[in-house]
Structures are given as C-alpha cells and as structure tokens.
Amino acid sequence: MPKRATNILLVLAIIMLGGLLWSRAVLSISMGLMAVYAIYSLKQNNADLFSPLFFWCVSPLLLAFTGIYQAGFTEANISFLLTLMVYPIAGITAIVAEKYAFTKTISQPWIHAAFIALLYPLGWFVLHASEAFELYGQGRTLPVFMDTDHVRFSIFLCSALLFTLLPVRNARYKKTSFIILLGAILLLAVRTGWVISAIIVVGYGMYYLKSKPITNRNRSRNILIAIIAFIVMLAITPTVQQKIRYTLYDWKTYNTKGYDSTYSDGVRRAINTVALKAITEDHSTAIGWSAIPSALQLKFTQVMNGQNTQYGWPFNQWLFWWMGSGWWGMVIFTTWLFYPAWYGYRNKNPFLIIWTLAIAVSCLVETTINYQYGALLHVWPLLVCWQATKNHRISR
Image (cartoon, rainbow, N blue to C red; front, side, top):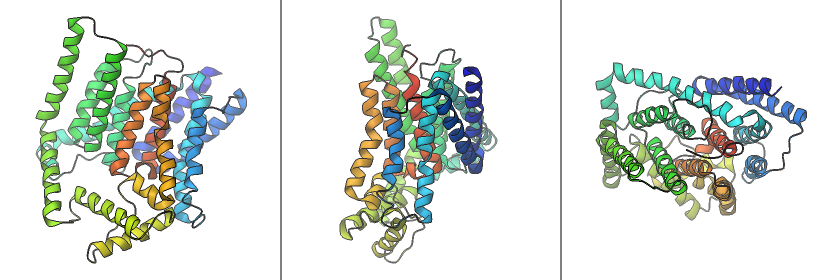
C-alpha cells in the first residue's frame, strides 16, 4: 500500500505541476484530486491532525473572515476563500503522506518541471537574442509559461533551486541542477527571482558554515571562490546590467516627472502610496476584501488628478491586509506568515526559514498570496521544506 499511495501522490503532483505551467483549470482540478487523496488517506491511516503544521494550514481560512464579515459572501470574497483552500488541502496531504516520503515525491518532479519550463524562455532567447536584450533594456523579461506571469514563474524556479539543497537521499545531479537553475534565474532578469535566489544562497551558506565549521584551508578556499564567483557572475551578466540600468531610470523618472503608467516601478510606488493615503487620510481600514478595489481606485483618481487605474489591490500584502481587515488583522496575518520561520528556528530547519523569508520579501512588492499561483507557490514548497527534516538528518 505505501508504494501505491506514493505512486498516486506522484501522479497527482505531476498533474498539479502541469496545471501550474499550462492550465489554471487543470491546476484547480488537481487541487480537488489532492483533497480526495488527502481525505481518503486520512481515513485509511487515522493520521493525527493535531500538529502545528495542520493548525498553520487551516488558519488562512479563519484569517480570511477578518475581511469577509463586512460584506458577506460576495463573489470576490468567495474567490479569495477558494484561493486559500490550497493551504488546508496541502497541509492534510503533507501530514497523511509523510510516511510515503512526501518531500521527495513532491520535490523531485518539481525540479524536473522547472527544467521543462525553462525550455521555452531559453529557447526563445537563443532564437531572438538581439530582441531579448532590447526587452531587458525596457525592463521586461523573456516569455514564460504560467500565463506569462514572470514574477510567479521566477518564484517557481527559486523553489526548485531550494529543493536542490534539501537532504533528500538518492537525488541525482543536485549540484549541477542548482548551478543551471541559478544561471537561468539570473538570465530571466526578474528582480523578485534575484532577491529570492540571493536569500537562498546566503541563507543556506550561513547554515552550512555554522553547521560544519571550517577546519581546513581547502574548504575555506572553495567557499570563498564560490561566493566571489556568484558576485562576479551577478555583476557582469548583461541581463543584470540592463535590468539595473532600467530600474535606476524608472525610479529617476518617477522622482522627476511623477506617475507614468508605462513604468512598472512607478505604478507600484503610486498604487502603494495611494493605498497608504487611503488608510491614513480616509480611514479605509477593515473595509473588507471586496471593498478594497473601489476604495483604492477612488483615492487614486483623487490623488492623481483625475487619472484612473485598472489595479484593485495594492502591490503590498500588508497594505492589502491593513485595508481589508484593519491593523489588528494585519498583525495576526504577519504572525501567521512568519510562524514557519520561528518553527524552523526552533527545530533546526533552515529551509523553512529561507522559504518564509523568500515569500515575505515577495509580499513587499506583490500581493503574492492573493493569487492562485502565489498561494500554491507559498504553501507547497513550504510544506516540502517543513517535512524535509522529519525523516532525514540534514547533512552534506
């Protein structure tokens, strides 16, 4: 039975990854299948749900009601609830599948899917190199799967990058996979991906140095060379240079000319500034999730001299929570978000800390958890990391 259960989980993981890359409908169906698998396995094995993992995964549904009670079950609120359903589904699956090598069963096809997904942007880069560099100069990136959502795509690649460092036995070509994925993340020129990959490299490097004190010159030399090589690669990569130049130009333009909807950073700064003004000047707090778009767009028109915006959420998860559920809801959300890092610290699990910080950083410039892709890329990699040290001793 364990082998059969593992194979079923593997098939479901492959369907989920296929949906993540190519079809939201398939992704939704895969979550339904995961729920059936989790409930059936729960009944068969009488697994104990009373654990920190389970309570953490159920909490988002309870937290959601801090912004639902104001208007009730509107279409927007129901959509948000359905997005958050991935947390308890993933949580119960991780608990019941623990004995079936949950970490390896999910992480290995995840890494393989990342390599398959890279064929499209890398192939396009080879065939359109000159056009690609023009895109970099405009602050854009290569075409990708996942409905061209390059931010979430870069987070997906970073999760695969972290998985190559997990203490999974019989995982082949981990070092090679790490190098290739890191290079691809740099080439894609998505700043969210750069920052998260830096968190992974620095975070794991600190853990490695702390857990294995340097006792000889060779090891010290190798680590120093690796750090220098990473910094040099980051500095001389044309994509990085182009992106940095565009970012500086974008910020300079906003500071001198004000809001311009054609510049991505300018849009983020303007929307977040307006959201903060709505909170502090109009007391638009605890207004409920469904009321955020109208409040934000109305304030935007007032602040930006009659201009309109299509965006209905701030580009910051905390501003969204502050507007929707009030400051107290934002504090509870923050506690929930960072709890896995505290749990990882208490249980000597660096991977939990790293991925929690990675998602938190993305939430500074995106409402990551509001999106189907974002919520999935938060919870599944986190639970893979959560269970990684249950049956394996971290070692290198």
